[in-house]
Length: 504
Image (cartoon, rainbow, N blue to C red; front, side, top):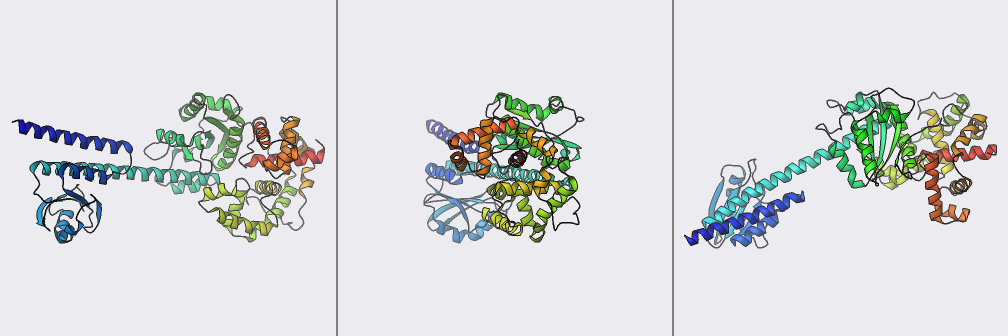
């Protein structure tokens, strides 16, 4: 009786240890460590153990001393176990007692093989069976986790593809890509873009917390920014009619909008920039506004800001016909380069080359090669901030080719001729007015140094850290994004140019 009790206690202790290992592996959330289970089983039973995959010639995992030579004469037996004709088999080969068990419910089955000098005891047979069941559950859990991760990765890719289509002004393309499961956002008339700055690890948590079974986020869409790993791009369907103040419309919203505001309010690591309401085809404009709003938000105690826009330079401030002639004249050479090179160029005037590479999934060298074609066609250096500002303005004026091409492109007017009017001067005053003299001098030196902070520091007679601190302060008061290479830099380039022309 005492011996029986001891055996039961030992078996119970073994199973407890086995379950502890199972809980440990499940808690890790990674692929099951089959080898660790087999090593434990070896210590308990003194048998050599292996897990043979459905291809009977492949050992998925084994204890270090497993005699693989025994598998060759067992090939036919293992095949019968793998295809489900047998569940368990016992044999003797090479002086070893061998026990094989097919695992799982789906064919082909992996096979657990135990080989030892002595015939296994009933307790060993029971422990082998328990271990086989545990391995089956762990493998199923690992497969389910792999499927879940793959689904999440595909959902993220699809959301990013939808964002890309919207950023290029093609909501119809976004609907085609999601046919059968069109996100509710694409049925909305307008959207508002929230740009959330947060620790990179928080993006997954926030996106998963609000994800629905379709892989979207209810009426909204959360997309990981591929360029800035601290940014979560939040596209929120705009339900209310446009109001005079963005704050009124946003404060009236609950749901995800309210959740994002609470996150910023409760955690100093977060900041939020909020665009105005835009039609779906103007998502790129909403993104630009949110970027500027985020730059203005980060230095403030609230860490949240709405975009308070000014009339863009390419809007009603320039003489329309002459501006189009100038813009098409500048961009006309790009018609001679491949469409991909032209698209890379369009992105590169607003983003760094490494950012464009991450956005398009290209190498930085490939991006540089495309840009060399554009530079050769334009006969300009796209690393020059003045050139990038001019190309950006021309693209904005032409709507990336949407505007009709004027017939006269041979002798376009000079940009200075277009910027010489009083409306442009008033625009420049509005842009630069919030700057004090010190920050304006630093900004001027930075632009003249081609946005190189070290060169600007030498030019201004201050340290590089001082230059960056002044630029951060300028971002806050101007409400423009300067340090990530966005369109805010272009506005400053043109404003300073106009100010110099008019003596402002």
